[in-house]
Length: 241
Image 1 (cartoon, helix red, strand yellow):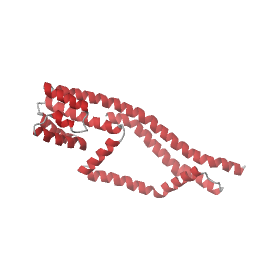
Image 2: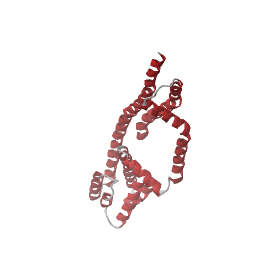
Image 3: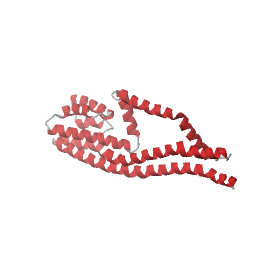
């Protein structure tokens, strides 16, 4: 819900911007191009590039459609395969700000699940096994499999978690305290609350950053197209005059 709340307005703006640019490239630019061609106006470099882009899109739009359809079917066919999950997770984690945001969401799901299972008197080891099936995020799933093996070998949960970069160092420290004081449920509840607060703050920051950024990019793109079309219009008015 936090992600949808943060991204819904930027997605609407981005979709509107995309449709506006497509409209200009398909209808506005060709109209100006015909006028310039009929009057033999020498076109500036930027105008030639915009007209070339418009012609390219009109001729090869089907390539873009095939590309998006191919990506969609590739995702459908491979979404349950390990290599695909690993690839998608690595792509997500490499995106600045957004990658850390996704990682915290998955960690919050993990701590909440463990907290609920511990409160239901489920042993921590069984809780880890169940959580592996609940959370579909490859880095966390692979880490939990390794943690389960370490715990079976007699290592503590904090020692096992420390080996995996998907977990924060503060989380490792708090789990170590929980093990020493036998307060696992309380610590995991507090970790869940802390991560939820971080997620809420970052979701608002994400929305605040994306909205003006998308509007700025849209303004630059539309202004570039309009400038490219209107510069030759001044030459055309001079010729007609």
